[in-house]
Image 1 (cartoon, rainbow over the protein chains, first blue to last red):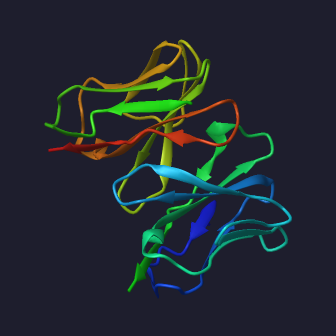
Image 2 (image 1 turned 180 degrees about the vertical axis):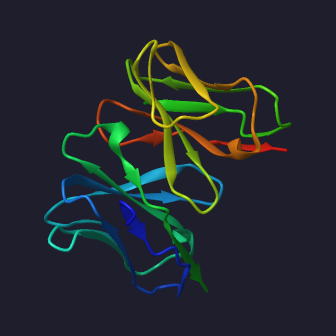
Image 3 (image 1 turned 90 degrees about the vertical axis):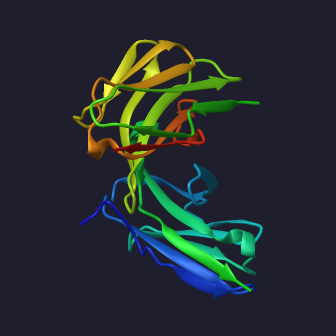
Length: 112
Length: 111
């Protein structure tokens, strides 16, 4: 089983739709979680951290389910500019930047 | 504010040729520095990381090496490239924590 698994997609959604991605992780010791966004042939950029209580940043909501070992990203009112690949990242409690495990990403395509 | 510069953006090299990719960070001191590779359809793979000048940790055995001659400079090298070295190479930095900030990447094609 991979340490971090994501549905590669693509998720094709109309503009204005709500879309959600899940990411499962295998290491129960994982403590820190992030979502990164990566545009085609560009570098990943930190989108948001994922906190235990769940957190929201504008149209984006991230949630953590420790019991089932997954995190989710919900995007409301999708924009064309949201089209990108979304990478899930996890790290254990004792990890630093060298302990991050990246998922392979979920591709989102927002269409007119 | 902190910035990270990575070059070149694209590179086409013949098999057996040497490689040198450079990355510099501005606006911070003593950053942790990283080299990642992203192959098509695969997740980011950590190649090297460094917590200080001259301190390099290698994560996977491979045909590549890294050096950190200055606090904010990180170099990825190879003496002889292989076809399997093709990929998207990303330099990144963090200030001791887990949030990474990436350079713009180098698309390397070995032919």
